[in-house]
Length: 496
Image 1 (cartoon, rainbow, N blue to C red):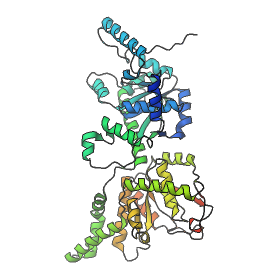
Image 2: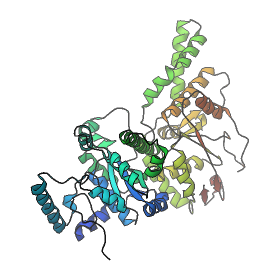
Image 3: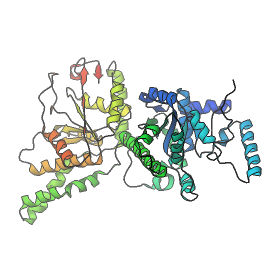
Image 4: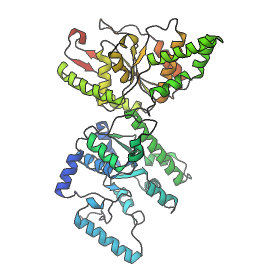
């Protein structure tokens, strides 16, 4: 039986393996890159039911090769076609000669070069179910669409979907090389080598070879184009629908990045100014000073001292150092750590909705270390941990602060200004989208049993939600179960 598959005469499809050495090199180059394995079965199911189209934010040859060879190695649907991305240098010589011949013949017959959108190459590939890749923010594609009034890729896919019975699935893709949070202000490196959101070629290559063993591919929520079209009015313009889909996919990718890296990082000084210049803080200081200028200055100074006492000073270099130390420590102290990866996948999904608030049991000082270690290991941004002020002694306080620790007094009695500064700082973190972790029991349970909850910090969080500092709060209860408490020389920890 003859195959109805058309031969590829375009340098946009990577279906045949390159030469032996190049194939071996690319497989080895990308084999250490991790990906969200919870999506494995869903991807295979979507590939069987319809056509999978991966969507990445910016054009990048390195990213395309990474997705192609990493997914191919793991027997997942891998992108064979890359819209508007010429991959001639990776094609076998005989295929390249055939393509060149086709282009020359077409040019002499038609007086122009062949356009794969107009000749039906891309349309036929999508209808056959060929897995592909497209870029959402592409200057060349925008120029073709805006200046030459050609349909953009998403508009093109929508029109194909209208003619197909099988669905087309759009899946946002993101690759993270470095877990350092993005900063609000650009550095000199950003100016010369591109921003972390869109690094230049030199910076991307440097990031890959430095961090490829820790790189992580994450998937956004799939969009079923068939279901989307069925939900839209029949007379809605396809161009407007394509623009909406593009924005949805970009927001999905940006949201995934925030789940892993956390929000764009403001400096400690920026947060200090936001908190101390808040209208409620300023009014509370004025009311207490009651017109006394000298007392007004003292109260302002005291408020600044309260902030310095409370606020953490998150530093990713310390986090990476702690990760290495704890990885060594767990191997030599415990028999193993058991974690529910299915629950972590659910947690990643819930993190799209709003800041995560982790509420674990508190039986040992190992609790917050193990939770943050597991989250960092599984590519989730670690939370700011609320700790008692008794933990702020040197050097413990310094290291805890660099991990983003927040210090709180055991009681707010007689310290109304302190209470307001603390509450405003917590609300500022929530507004920025930082995850938090606190122990509702207040202190450790030395008997191993849970103790009655204290609701003071919980009330601050609920006030933040009521006052619209966030759209939603997601509370995550966590149980840390030990065979024996670490202070009693226990030898195994089980976390879930």
